[in-house]
Length: 269
Image 1 (cartoon, one colour):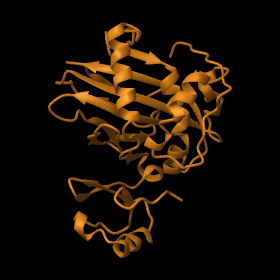
Image 2 (cartoon, one colour):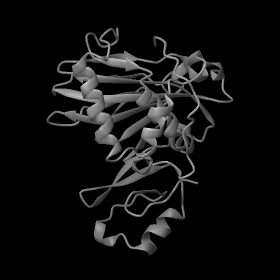
Image 3 (spheres, rainbow, N blue to C red):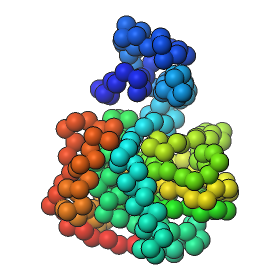
């Protein structure tokens, strides 16, 4: 069962719109009693916003609000920016030319594993992690329409932060219908990366940091892509222990833990 947090989000079969003042326990418990995947409701500016969706099982995507909160979000955002400025992040990604990106960064690999329980809840699948990847998009960047390779069967794009006048949406083609999703820092979009065409139009801001977390169904046709066919994830024990201090900032079940005994093994994407 999905963890229920008053003031965070609920799922309900009835499209509701109510203010912060009306969020009494009885109303929320009545909403929670009819758990379905027909819509997400989340608090923004004191108002519960409804995002209609058939859910991951039906439509192949789900919006996840507030997956990573502060201080974890700010730490990872600033870390990615510093990596880009220092030249640590390569600029050889053919999909977005001359844009800093990094495959299997140890911090992001830890995040990949830490968020797996939440992704399993939302997808309804038992998953194996494959790899993480982050980009620091720059002014003018365009992500052309594409689908992903087998290791990206179940994908998450997570906004860590941006400097721009507004949110830079990601688009999905859902049954021939283009749908856009505005992800504020800490929000994520869960989607079937190899099935749904996705893209981003030209970026008008200064920078936008996105991390991509990829998984495969343990019982699916792409299960051999576990760890992206590496011996293990690129998790380093010292960094995994450091990331554990941010666990309370992540929207995951309390029982989720990191594997600390996996040696790093980075390869090209």
